Image (tube, rainbow, N blue to C red; front, side, top):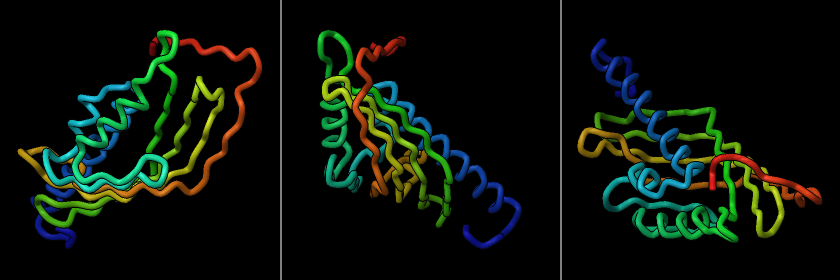
Length: 166
């Protein structure tokens, strides 16, 4: 489906690209909302190969990554989340390889506030993903994360956090 093809082929490719972009956005939204079920739903049922780098680790299957996500994202201290994240994906480069397979590259602007360490981290990250059509929906089958750089700075004395995420 990478060649121009028929009108139906081109429409199918455009639909696949739109669905994959929506999948990635649901995944990132689940990360920020601390939603393990939504996070898990982004991946294939079995066989995902996920390499989130030195800090998070490499996983065969999404369930182990979900456990790490829960340990980091859902950790609470004094009744409040210890870590607050903000993911902004951009520069999507999706290549539909066939009716059930695609690849994608993304740039991620990542911001994290660690209320325990009292630091803020801002990172530029690249995703190299593989997608599979599973039961009529696109899912992440493979993901390799490369952190290009991270800036870490202490939170200012007397900082406050407000909002509805508790």
